[in-house]
Length: 157
Length: 332
Image (cartoon, rainbow over the protein chains, first blue to last red):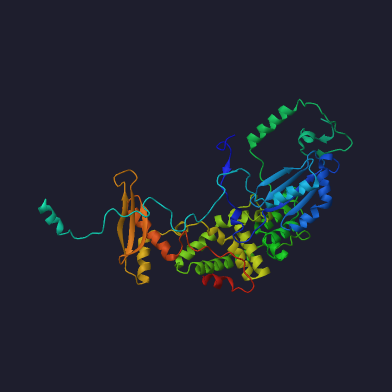
């Protein structure tokens, strides 16, 4: 689809994050996997070795580990602005899953759609926005008494 | 379907839960194309259209929820040291306590043995609200020393208004943790919960840390906002005259500076205001009256120091050797 047919948004941050203090936007991770299926092998490996370290390094994210009978293992990430993102990790290795988690941690929860502009500013102009009248000399000069030469000039002609 | 089982047809295929009535009957699985699937999904879609989407459930009633862990993560996410019991008390609203007691009475539980040992957050909320208003007024006066009292009051009223506070609260994850009778949490309940969290922070970490918290999350909502969006001034020219007489400056005189398209559908006039032939401000407008009013507003913004290109607010973290927040700002 074209960019006009798909949704798009402007570059923004949730609640001016980073201006005051940086708040990690990921609030909850739910890891849904199967205890026996082969698709969840990587995730089982990750839970054995990596998930506790991850939870220790990110105290602001609550990690829920939920073994269920399921065919496709998922990681459900909930963000502070209410968005929920599901990542399907079928057949991924433990290292790939930790990369996925780093990616999810660093994202703000805003939609992953086309960004209209790669920049944003709240102070677009310091010296004042240009408009066609800026730096234009005024067409009417200051009001002065008429010159006496004009009468002499007319009489010459 | 199999007898003795209250089975939803979508159990094995769609994953919807079943309620077991009797355990000794096994469920037979059909792996081929299911002939009932199409009519079942159509019926469910019709039901959804008739009844509308299901009512929203609070996050605490959905799977994967641990209140203690969530409260701890809330505290560390905001990089604040909350005392957990004060914080947990801050999330309990009186409407929730009433609803809980109603439910217990409806279930027939004895009110003495199963009494709710929870305190609500009304006092914390009042304390937090008072602190917020006083801190925000001080912060505004420190950042805009020339802004007059009504302007400061309007800015603070805007920052402590329900839409702004509930927007901040929703984006900080307070809505999930709030215990209230209804879902989704109504605005006034969310407002008082946010104020109670501020009160709990003040109890736990003291006034300065709470001030930094408010500066980082509430005052930052001022970024990109114009003064006269928050402060309705009916007569800007009169206010400008008052301001100039207070500072013993001569009264402003409007002069037409630029004009374009005066006889067209979209005329443009620039009116400049001069005080004793010295330029104050100029403003555009479609008619001369509108341009003069806009020029007065621009002049007021310049006088109060609330222009678009004013010096950015100081959001840097407080170092231990620095002066306290308000003094450091006013020395700018």
